[in-house]
Image 1: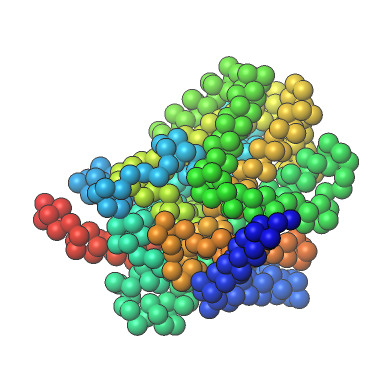
Image 2 (image 1 turned 135 degrees about the vertical axis):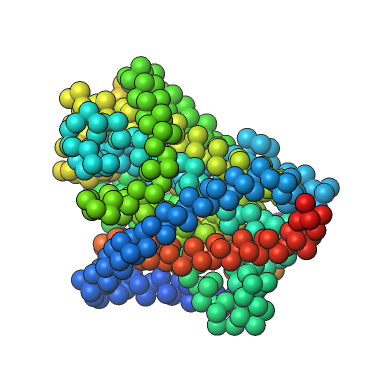
Length: 524
């Protein structure tokens, strides 16, 4: 190796290591440590921790579920008003700024960041659960129950969910690109409301830790689903046991792959990965559509979409206070709280990629493209699994109850023409989808815990890498500690409730900023 090349590598390595100084260690280590503490408590005191987490989750959904539903619907209403009002034309950046990514790449990055690999998992799994416990007072096995199977799945992955993802992105993007701030700690974003002293003091510190923990908890849940699903597929194809060794190996593979994407950068790495993911997933979906019950898929989807639009308000506020079936609490309220917990991850990532776009473009692209993309996969994979079950073609429900949702999904995919080949393609798509979500999470966490972002609003590569390792370590710990993912899920829902208060504070800040920067719009 030449001396010049050696010197270059040493300089690069030295620069990489020195950049750790830009990591906010006061936030990073306590947030990671707090998450590990929850996991450790789940191992040392499994019954007590699980009871506490489940009791807390049930208390929140039973006592404050109506508020969670109201907050979710309010996010959609506020964003649509904002997009179509005079404020929708406000550019997120200087007037001379142009979008960094093409319209298609922008939409694909939003979609892949928001859904990950969990979408296809639940596209098959949710309708099967609803078949056993139908919503809206339907009887099991009735024709009335069948109309809700993918209707509620479409609803849970539809406009309200994407609005919850999108709402914090607007103030984050305004703060980053319009105000030109280089520190994205949530407490600093809220400084105009909570005051500088609180933002830099204990109150701000607690806000930041809770926000990061919520993201880690929400992401760990998605990672747990994905690793279990890919492991089940590998087991089906090769016979390798889907045990802790395989699962930890898969998480290590995610970290290694992320390193390659990260060093390629946002345009060459993240954007191209998102594009490839969407194209591959779209082709897979079209194959299932063509080789499956095509007419039924179209008919069932449009019928279900009609039922959803016809009952959208009812579904948005259905809390079942009299019959107390528990369906809204276990599903809708859980989903909304889970989405609220993603405040930092989705808010910061969407803000990062929205420079040069208007508030209207950010809002409408996120809600429409996110909902449409999710509907595409739910329509195809959900309808295919429902058709297979109700016509006795495949025992999807039996597979799910006996072996779990992951194996049911794998067996359903494997039953397609050229099943083994399609299953391999499916597993690669799932891996890449999860990789985009992991990349989005690591970038967002890095931006929030970087002392000062560079001119392009990017965190240092070293900070992004240590966050990828931190996220991977949390996920591995959850698998090693067995059953802790369920506890993390419950804790994530508990954290989701106070996030709603932060949403409100962020919108108050946004109003103040617009009033300062655009008095002519406020005067109107």
